[in-house]
Length: 410
Picture 1: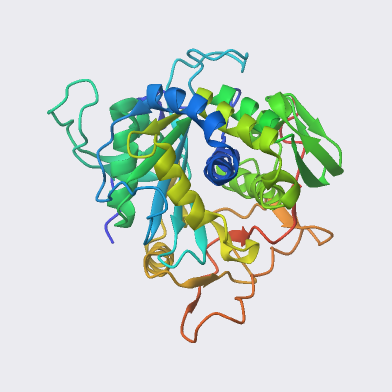
Picture 2: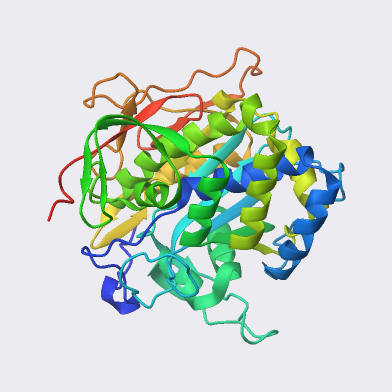
């Protein structure tokens, strides 16, 4: 395959090592999922108060090939893109120097299978080189932006808005994506507070002066600014790369999924309403999603999925210059399995694009990767796909710990 021409990182005013842009990856995904589930549980009066805010904070991205269901009528697969922005504009908190950018450093696609028995959360690294299609110009309705080739995926939000991020992911994967949501730093802080914090495990101490996060080995309950710092830290985990940061963030997400699915959370109406309120105030939803009936319909698809069928993976890549390009063979195997609604089984010896490791199984050695999930005995014959060892991830059922380091010491 011909090697694509690579644009330099500086062309888009990208990140500086001394000021790593936060990733709000996993809290975004489960935060919205919890919001959707809470729509089933919280009283109609409370949600009526939130509905106006949802409607006010929405953006039109087109349907993306999907239809808007009525309440209780959702059928078929669900595809929802969650985008996290590094913007400091309009933020209440102080998150370091303002880089003046609006980069989508978080891009995750949630796929719920047609029969609503399994879900996949696929994370696309911020430095992945992609081709951007002719997106609709958000500032000039009826006009399209020029397509771009071989640009980093985290430039697409600034280039063409949330709709362009959606179109780019859809073009890369061949998956139709009718729903999208955008969240910023303030939103992560608010939602982690609303859920009451998340308990995470740290296998080796994290010391990161860049984000001012210092956590000893052991168990920590994180919320508010500390939760954001944990999700931001890149220098402080694994080998300091965005890829090992994603693995570390899966520690947070898997713990949050487990908490969200516990009866203590789903029956706490005050907490659920707080999540809904926080999301309404801090997230921009596509017009296809900013509707309570739609949320309830999707919630009914997400809520019953068991932890071992909730699989979190990185889109497989290889290092190329100052960024990453798709590992085409592994990516095709992963995407084809997701599109076919197969049960995914991860390799017991995973190896990502770099040699670093951002997480390990709780109580396990940092020298060995997380074991593969075992498909449920109820899975039909031929339903399971063994993924290549270059697909890195875990299930929400696995209790993992972040692997810290001292690379962030200054």
